Length: 226
Image (cartoon, rainbow, N blue to C red):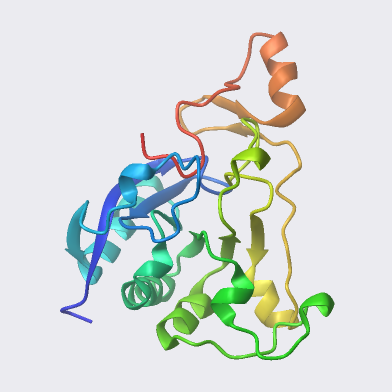
């Protein structure tokens, strides 16, 4: 692992839009999916960004967490599963340090897990993975937000994902229960940040805007790097 590297675009040290709570977000460089309307087209080229050692990246992310007083980390992109070995090594290091991990992917979970039994309708997750590194990463991830970005299912007030087809899958609960467990991220939330800003979504955003409070259009949306 000492020689393993990963290509990233940037680290966002203080995020409230890339998953619930205050988080540190890292964006992998390179994406083979290329969704129409993607807000991060600059992250598509596999030769962009910077190459860093996985161990050094883990140290940087954990140091940012320690400065903020939490261990919440989101891995986005780009497409993290385009670098499966680096992703698995990174999630292993972060999870061993007690991090809560959210990973955003344009892939669908069932395709990543490559289920070999026709049990999609029942929600069973029996099956095997094709790539051992992908399996290792999935075993460490707490929440996987899966599915391609679909521009027609976007909404400016949606929380923690880009379009409504994308599912927040509680993989920790999924592993315990042996079936896919999906979280409810559609309930409006009111967030007061560490520096006193008020963030809201959905109908709450409209109510607060009417009162002259809150931020209905945050400077950065979920997954956005600029």
